Image (cartoon, rainbow, N blue to C red; front, side, top):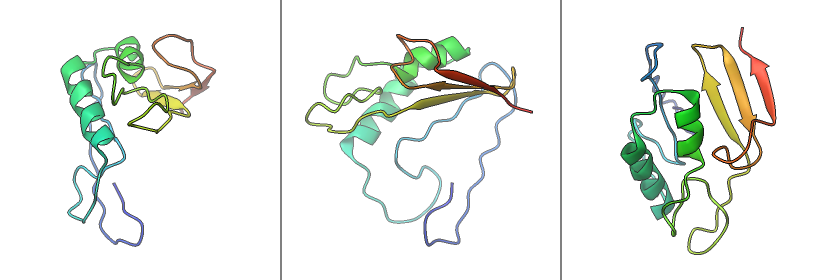
Length: 118
């Protein structure tokens, strides 16, 4: 993580493997700086923890497309009280060395593009 205008940096190292994943919901998880995350960030992070473990790219796509929380879904649709919209979803599969880009709900649609990671 790095914050604008800050000299703080936090690097999270994850081992390659089926159970290694990380998330970011518009909030700093490791930096000690003032922030005011929205209720949506907390709801979405909690929901992802409830859906864990995420053992495959398909599990990750299903979790990032989750809409079970009617007020603050992981896949944001712009409806009140949240107001935010998920514009795109990227899933980095470092084991397979592929980046999958979704422009629609990843739980319901195939990736729009796939890029090799070399």
